Length: 180
Image 1: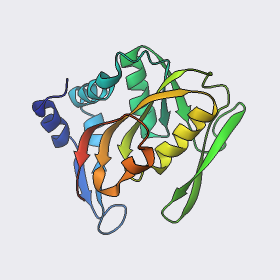
Image 2: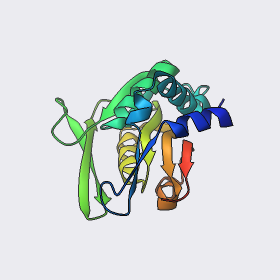
Image 3: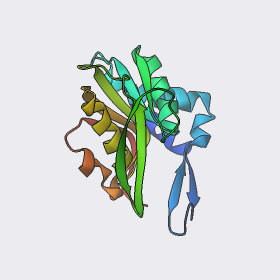
Image 4: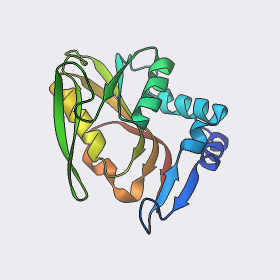
């Protein structure tokens, strides 16, 4: 269970980098949290806790930090992990989903046989910003017949309203920033 003490520990482990990647942005750098054994373990536990009784078959995480937390949560929950990658990175037959960026579009792929009809799926990523990446991942899982029981994020930038794109899902964020 997440306590205020744990939340404060995790917040202290996240470095704030001003004007990255461009002026006016405060980048929430989690590499400092990832390098701290206790912080990493507490993060995984806090992200997995709300979903422990959901009988998850697979955790799905997008490249690249979704891999880090996705594998940790799969281990925590005793299930498998499915990666979502940038185009051309997976060796077998894939499905793809295009999604909108601030200035253009991008595309993600996953193996066409990664999710079985009726699989209970937990979606995972490090950060919820605008929601576009996670929405694309969810769309692919549902096209393959997966049943998404929730989405777990380490950090949510609530002021960017990414939750709006994912409103039909049970969303859990360990840490929330209400402003830049």
